[in-house]
Image (cartoon, rainbow, N blue to C red; front, top):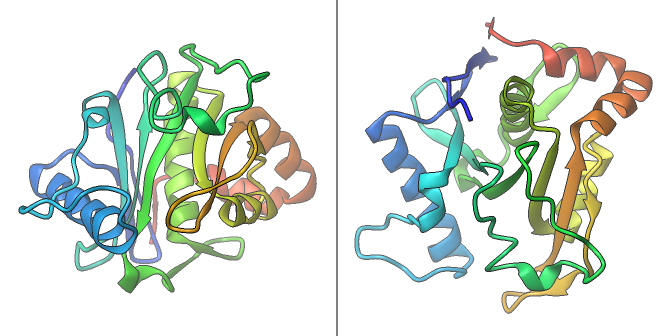
Length: 217
């Protein structure tokens, strides 16, 4: 799949596919801060970088502020490659769900927001949005360019409900499981075509903003 860089500027923030070495290092540092130091999901490393085998098969997205600090991060694991849902989180999928493994399906993973940026918002042409929604805006554009319709994700059940309330129709494909840290994790699947149908009808201005891309300063 193409990893042509996607860049979008809005309200002082820059959304992009992360390619530069220094920006990649910022993403690995942020991942370590969240997943090793804050959540304890992975072991701490002496260099404070959180890197795994999926990085070679993924496209990393980041939202940076005006000072080039990385505010939020998420990666897309390309369709046809091994998903974390197949290995680390396979126990979250119901036995009657057949995991999609085709070029039109990818997996979201390693979503993290820097603690200092968790109250930051983007004032779009329709409402005020979190940096996570801006990440999804960029991922949507990338998916449309690469023929990707479906996205898997694993997240806190509460976060999944929040996504749906904001117009992202993630549906559970398994029963929530309480993790050792107390988070109730759930495996989700979203159809971008369903996202479009819902928002064209119920939130047309949000949908219009979501499709706007380019410089918007």
